[in-house]
Image (cartoon, rainbow, N blue to C red; front, side, top):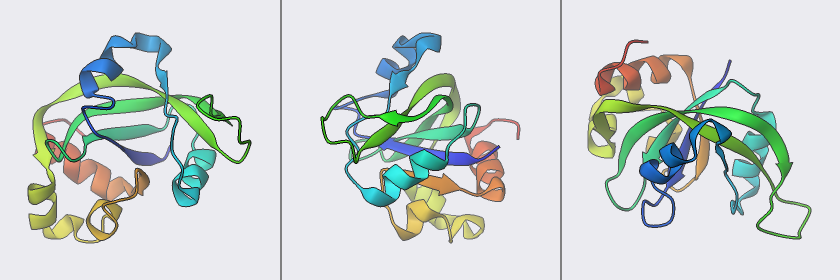
Length: 139
């Protein structure tokens, strides 16, 4: 299993909207960055991810799971763009802010810290466990 982080501005797509989609999940479409697209191509059903509110909040607010592997992005007719579907698994009891992530030496190499603009990014197993711990979840 691999771990990921999905960033969304809550005004565009929020955690509450993701939760409302239920087990059906939602296409993580509209991504127009080759590196992020390539990460989605690597994802497998069952991979887990953090749902991160960007711009407003700047914090990890939930846990998601990949429920459909890479497929054509329905938001464009351009066949270069693909996306996965994700579903909400659980909210985090204590949202983990970017400030807290940056302050944690165990997370200093996290992609979120090094390249905060990338909308879909990998998370190492150690980073996954540490952010879950900070969020009040068991690893």
